[in-house]
Every structure is written in structure tokens, then in C-alpha cells.
Image (cartoon, rainbow, N blue to C red; front, side):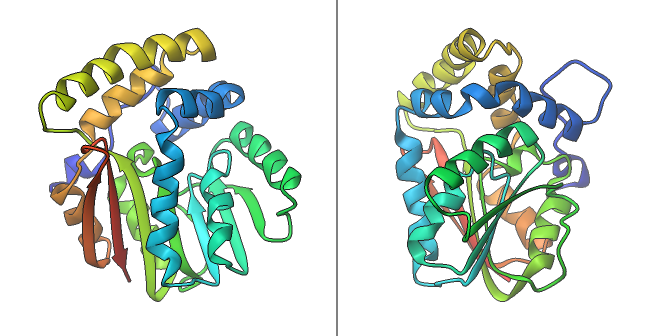
Length: 246
């Protein structure tokens, strides 16, 4: 893995602004329809994927968890099942966070879950703060992958665990072909129809194809300071679940 591929150059919009600014703009734009599209376009499988993340942390029983790129807080809410004392969800998009806060409030979880606006590559926390860090479909949106992973490692306590869920590219026929058609044509068409943002779901396809998955991702995570790294391909390789410890 070289320094160029550690920078995530694919952006949602054809603008001169940086990737972080564009990611914030994109998620603010689609926030009102995000949960619906997430359930619909994943055919509900996103619920199963979050359960896998919870299970990978269940034995660890972390007291405090940082959920990066928390969006509308689905992962943060799911993590209550392992009975932590505190969950902090961090995201660039205030639009997504507003929806997440409403969900947290309705579920009566305000005492447990705090949602804050922040930059994943410049985390506003001291070293050795969290016993676990989670990210679902967020590392692909980092501007600098190594920097983002290094920040995650910095704020984790020694022995803490990281659980990362991210899209990957299937290799098995005919899943590979169906997946490519679905993500390249169907998702952008539906995304534009429902969210009115014709760039967001085109960016999804482009960013997945540009992302250094599998061993390439583990190589960057190792540079960031993680060890005992593992990668699991899930749902025919549509997503990968990465785990490691500090």
C-alpha cells in the first residue's frame, strides 16, 4: 500500500472543495431519506450486518464505545445490547445527527448515547479514552485512510478493539455481475429518484471500487498501529467485517 492509495481521492461532486466538505454536503442532502434508502437498497440486510458488529464486541464487554461516522445512530443504538456505560457517536453531517438524536430520544437512550459533530480524522478526544471503536460504512469516506485509522488507534485504550464494516467487491459468479449492475445502475437510479441527489449513490459505486479492501486495507490498519487484524467477507463478499486490537 503506497501513500497515494492511502488517500481516498473519489469525491461525490465535481467541485473544487475538499472531500470532507463534499461528504458533509452529501449526507446533509440525503439525511431525510437515508434510513429508508438504507433499508430498501440493502434489502434489510443492514440489520444483520449491525448484529455481526455487536457480536464481535459482545465478549469484550467495553464500558465506553466511540462510533465513528455514526450517521443516524443505528450502530450506536445497536451497541446498547452489550450494556456499555457510554456510547459516543461522531459524524460530520449535522443533518444525519439531527435524525439520530430524534431516534435516541424516542428510544429513551439519551442517558447512554451522545451524538456529536466532529471530524473522524481529527478526533476531539485524548489518547487511551475508549475501550472500543466502531465504524459502519464510514472509512470509505475518509479523505486520508491512514490518518483516520491512526486517530482511531490513538483514542483507544491498550487492548481495545476496533470493529469496521465496509463494502467490498464480490468475486463469485454470478454475484459479482449482479452486484456490479445493482450498484452501478439500480442504486444511483433509485437514490436519485428518492433523495433527489443524483451524485450520492453514484459516489457509492465509485468509492466502493476505489476502496482498498481485504489485505490491502489490513496493511493500512497495521501501519496505523492495529494488531491481531482479521477480515471476514460477509453476504457473498458484498461487505467485509474487519477487526483488530490496539
